[in-house]
Image (cartoon, rainbow over all chains, first blue to last red; front, side, top):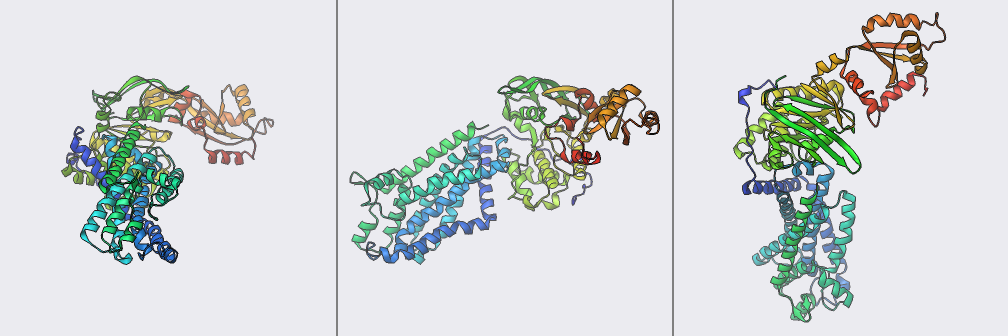
Length: 293
Length: 338
């Protein structure tokens, strides 16, 4: 026993606290503290920051560098690493966001979820706080990858950086909401990881993060058009390509955009798709979480 | 007993059914403000189910309960604002420091910002963890974590503190220190403490205890009065043939004995004076056919005896998994029989 009893305090010194009734302000405080907890945990866990960078760097430099010679015929002189860079940005955010959402499964396993469930706050505040926290953490991770843009021939233009940051945060939010809507139903970490592998990897590959989304076989084109991630990857690529200097032919081949019956979807609409999807999934997560005992 | 007139908890005919199984079969009781009230019983007696209904984690099948002046079903939020909870299983975030865990709790409960700091210092000092406030909870021992949970449960100055098996899995020394904290706390904070335990010796710390068995309250009183109600001393014998010993006790000395925790046990007035008679009868020189007694102990009534007199078994025998070590030691002593 390390602890010994402190000298008794004077009973009159007792600091009494009166807990006020639930209000919008108290809900905001709850959202904020749940959000902050995610950040504190992220900052404390340096291992996680490093390990979650391994995969994107592996894809970017090993896959991108290794396949360069094979792909050079089709890239019109553009470095393959430059081409897949927007996709890698999305990948970083996606996997970090998924892991953040997984924390709700950990919280359940280690009992901490109960502490939040019995608090006199709305369940929605907890879910919103978690979602914003996960999005912030994933966004921060994306910034690290954004910082190496120069290494793959992408300029550090303010418009590009702020635009990319906005897109990353949006994607991080949507993916965290998606992850939460899955994680709330799942009681064990192994199952969550299994489900994620099953959903996230195909979604990522089909999205066109690593190849242009035109001239694909019909079945892949169909899958690509219904993959929500495609609508996050495309504006990101459009943004990056708007800031690099390449031939018109290369632009047509590498940044074809998403077409519906010959009509190219504008970036704003694509962003709206991701945003609405994110909000919809957040609503699902809140509904599920409120229904759990 | 520091009970005042107002009741902190009022329970009327509370029931909880899980499918076919009736976990709590209509219990009624009252806990006065400022009381330390213990719920005692083996695992599966319905203690945790009852406590979960009182702290709004489970909805009762029928019956009513009011905690801190609010109905647990109709005014769930009001109840939650006024109670503190320490669960059986840990619910701390190991990645955060002690102070961060308390801060998080204060924010979730809406503790006024300027009071968070002073209140945190107070509760941490109370459980002797102030110096460790910046330590990561992951590095804390089991006893420290439990104390931190108690401190956290107090952050928002609840009127009733619920402790579900607060000392389970802790060593005896730590258990005792936790109890010292609980008693100090009750004096200093003037709060009502409702707790469950299945350690009989701990129930002695309570002002009043309710003994629960198979979903019902079988006895409710102060520990002293419950023990006085039993009266007789308890004699426990180790023999090399328990069944023969029980038969011999019945036939030769007119004593009704039974086997509990692998030993022969019975109750009798003035136990010390009975022991010479017992040995005279079981003397191998006189009655070589009787089983040999290897040890004998006489004890004043304990809450174990109270429990036994109401339920017919010791609390450990009533548990689903009897304390294995104890039984193994017994078996070795009895030469591997049974």
